Length: 316
Image 1 (cartoon, rainbow, N blue to C red):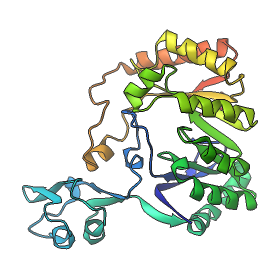
Image 2: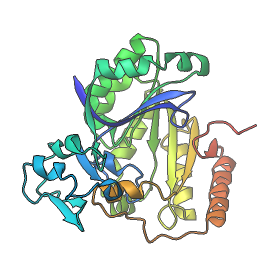
Image 3: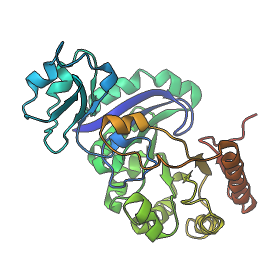
Image 4: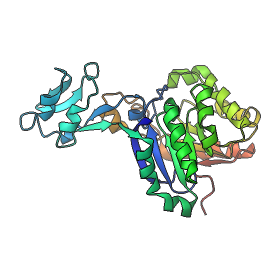
């Protein structure tokens, strides 16, 4: 069984305990404007354009020569500037031909065994640090069959497993991986479904229902709130989120992590010809970080173990 990934990151310490190998799966139904991985939204392998690396059409022109779709590659002043996504078939012939890496393939197909070869290279780090493997995305459970086989292979070799998921999928896909997953990481973006839909493109009903079901399985859960100014950082939503964690999730979240908004991934948006939805947002960073710390203090005052960032323990 093969999957489509857009990155394998070694030696990461942000998504689960210890030192980990993280696989980023392509495909996600949500369209959060603050998403730092726009290349993970489409389930297809996509070409990304980096104009500054283009040698020029007159000197090179190999991409134009191999492209099967006339007019799919767009040039200005002799340089490749964009791709007409309506015409592009995703064959990636242009990326294969480009000698300057001006066209980057966002995504590649990988088998479970190929992934395991990458994972086994890092096993010594897992053993020494209490780490393991994390699948993320995108939404990894859009490729639940591949994720199930990969995590099963990891568990058969004694490797700790983690799935970072929006849980915006049918519950049956979550059930597929339950026997092979030690830890889940999931977001709580907003408690009001209408607001959630306005900003992410989908309501939160299925997410909430799946989070409640997941709690009842007894699995370890880390919850995250991407704290976005003017979206979900108001007192009413924060209070409603605390109520939800304590009542609907029965307080069974081992850590609540607050991820402060950062302007990340803008270059990747440009490479894909996608608008960056948070381009107009301006914030006073010290003031905002102080606000996020106050939110963490509130959750802790309610008895919810909460930290700013991807930590699970206070730094010594």
